[in-house]
Length: 166
Image (cartoon, rainbow, N blue to C red; front, side, top):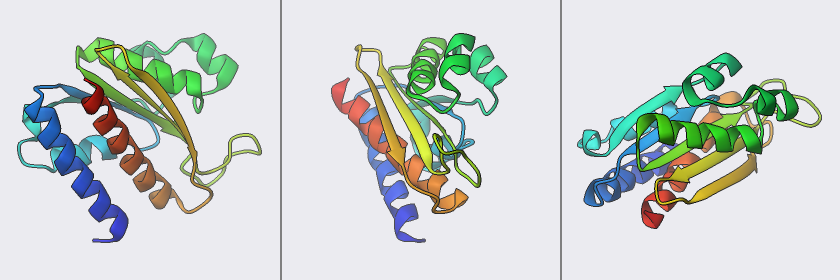
């Protein structure tokens, strides 16, 4: 297990412990991570006490159908944007009736563009208590797997923030 995997494992254990202690239901909405966040959480024994569900919405159509992301936001800002990350988190929270939801949308690579390079990832956090946070990270072109794992770590950290605020 490398250092990043160890960090992810430790964060997931902490998240399950705190979410369970507070009786909170956690929800994830994933695009570029393709289920890795939900997978990290559900690797932890007892995660069923706090993890409600995950949405893997890789395509724009899935983001609109499953999470109520607006077509206008996708057209105006693109899938990898603050607006879409925010709407993904809010949509996951409302659809699942959870307490804390995190979203991730990004460009894991290779590829990207001048304005949206490989390694650019947007995160959203929404809580039933009304907190709404967005965060941008540009990990750089460090390789698809490392970008995805780095995004998982960041998403777990955001979920912990949401649990703390709930």
